[in-house]
Amino acid sequence: MAEEAILGYLQHTEEIKDSGEFAAERNIDHNEIVNVIKSLHGFRYVDAEDIKRETWVLTDEGKTYTATGSPEFQLFNAIPPEGIPKDELQKKLDPSVFKIGCAQAAKNKWVEMGKQLVTRKVQNVDDKVKGLLLQIQQGQGIGSDDIKALKARKLIVPQTWKGYSVRKGPNYAPKRKQVVTDLTRENFQSGEWKELEFKEYNYSAKGAPLEGGHLHPLLKVRAQLKQIFLCMGFEEMPTNNFVESSFWNFDALFQPQQHPARDSHDTFFLDAPSTTKRLPEDYVERVKQIHETGGYESRGYVYDWKREEANKNLLRTHTTAVSSRMLYQLAQKPFAPKKYFSIDRVFRNEAVDRTHLAEFHQIEGLVCDRGLTLCDLIGVLHDFFSHLGMTKLKFKPAYNPYTEPSMEIFSYHEGFKKWVEVGNSGMFRPEMLRPMGLPEDVQVIAWGLSLERPTMILYGIDNIRDLFGPKVDLGLIKKNSICRLGIN
Ligand code: PHE
Image (cartoon, rainbow, N blue to C red; front, side, top):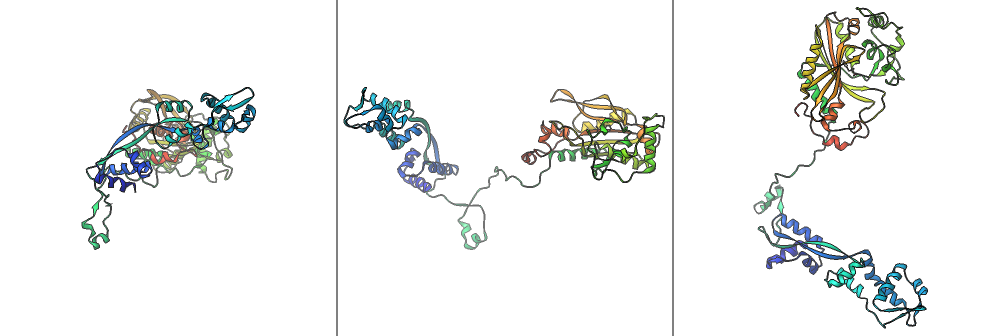
């Protein structure tokens, strides 16, 4: 109806001067008129120009008085011709009506506030305030003194009214043509297609958001890292066992049985099955030997090594458990150099905070060959980290029970303007490699880092609980960008 009214009116008249008046004359809601104008303007049927007006609207109090009459009017009417004691009059009226009514009626000289009685001073009064409020409500103008008075009594407040003036636009037609979006079989059969007008393609329209699966940032970064390792000629190790025996997780790595990391405070042990069923017995014997009495020029730890301790099942605390299994397997065949990597989940019984979770992911790489040195390790680390966009590296001596020498890896972060620790590395000890059966001149260089740390830096996430676990916002998973490791 609003659209017909506007287009029809413009057919014979040049301009709609004021959409507000236009709406009021036709008894159409102004909002509806405005919506139609905007739509017609979009298709250039009309040209529209903004108009603004300062108007007044009634406050809640003002609205009440349009129904009940002003307080002074109510008060006047509550006074009988013979007058009334003040306290009795007060009882007849609402407290605020009484208070305001007394003041205003006295000001208007409608009543006499005597000591004994309140009496009328005039016969009849006219409720001017109610009249003015009704006028405003109907959109009519009133005098500036009256505006001032009503505003002072907080019965009206200013409001900016927005509307349009409207003229014919370049595409004006008395009736909007329906543009079609599809050409159908029926259009052809009826011959209608000849007259049809088609909707133009909107090449800048945004597509509907794609619904479907979304990769978690950790998976995206993992995929990229996998690619880097593969490009460097590394093979992936099978990491599909979260449950590991203490033997492969600790003992094979020459980690003594009294080591604090083997405590239940740091490690999750399994209740069922609580122990492992099978270990390679001859190798277990050699591991026991190296712990207890040493060998291969090592003195060992000199303590009573207990098989029960090695049998205990746990959730692996590092992916180096996988590396130890793989190196043992490698040692069972004629020696061939290998480059291995893994990226998977590990578990530690740690207090959870903004940078630590009880489960996280490790990235691990190792190279196994004859005659490797610390220089080879440093070289491989430079190569690996440069693929991640980290070209400035520093190394700091460190300690791991299974590597000697060991180095912490630091990278200079251009954004943070400081050196940040990015990983741990070392050369596996002969005490670990020789009992496996690897030849004497074979060395293994290895390094490990968490997957969470680079992911958080790349995606600007500063609380690990926003990345992983039950508090993760699914919106983040849906919207995060692709991973561009090493490009930025
Ligand atoms: N396993 C070590 C860790 O959990 C990382 C590491 C791997 C260190 C290989 C040296 C060699 O932190």
